[in-house]
Amino acid sequence: MIRRRLVGIGDEGERVMTSQDAAQQDRGTSAVSQLARHPAPAIPTKQKKTAEELAAMIHQDLSQIEGCPQRGITVSVYGLNPWNSLLTFGVDAGPVPNKADLQALCDVITERLKRLYDV
Image 1 (cartoon, rainbow, N blue to C red):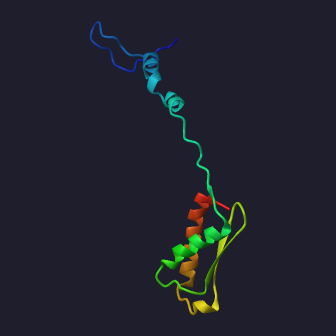
Image 2 (cartoon, helix red, strand yellow):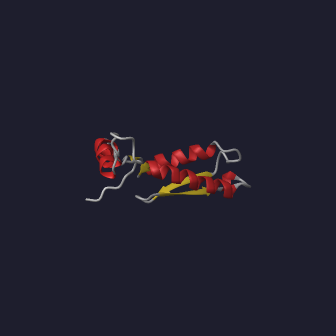
Image 3 (spheres, rainbow, N blue to C red):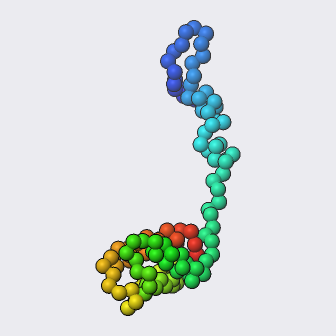
């Protein structure tokens, strides 16, 4: 067996550590042994929500944004897994100058909720 020196030659009587010695000494703290003692947590499961509950959550977040019409906007959640949302503006919303911004924000909110909830 070939042994490589990890530490230079010490004073007389001092033991020189080899790679084999280092491996034996490191067994208790290696990444593999750490994983064996502390397994990774299980993949968290997503909570179930109805399409109506998810639509209400998205609508609630959007209504907090300045410039979001208080009436005339509808959030629809469709599909199963993966699900998606659609933001529509009705006549009651009137002119909405920041419509594209609100739709982009709806997409951001939807992506965040998709990580947490299933339909």
